[in-house]
Length: 139
Image (tube, rainbow, N blue to C red; front, side, top):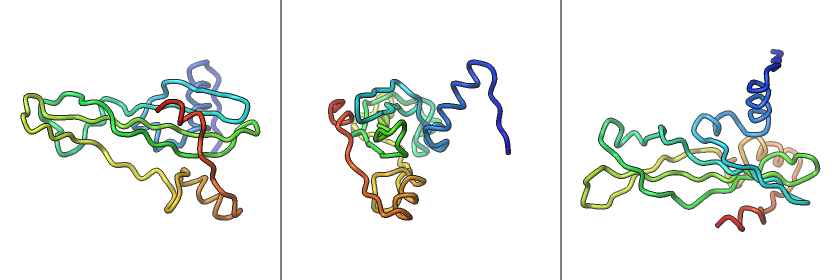
């Protein structure tokens, strides 16, 4: 299948989909891109509309964020490339038990912190994923 993007908005979306797996873009929005001499970091936050199934249809409020997760993905321009994900927490409005709810995602290859496609590539090529220094500076 050939895909052609010619308008500016379409080109931006197309580029983003080439760099970040579609399954992640369904639930997360891009906040910023941070780049240094050795790394590129895509900083994403879970969309507010991605309400956990347990509390869907109830009156809810946002309740902060879970600990962020950093996934390694395919290198770009000779630099290590990472996806930094911030998942939201919700709670029922007026609830006194302080129970919070969040979504669980299966974005990583088994036994790695790499995206599924990059993990499969690493497995085929026996490469080792490395941690992000940029993601550590955001915490």
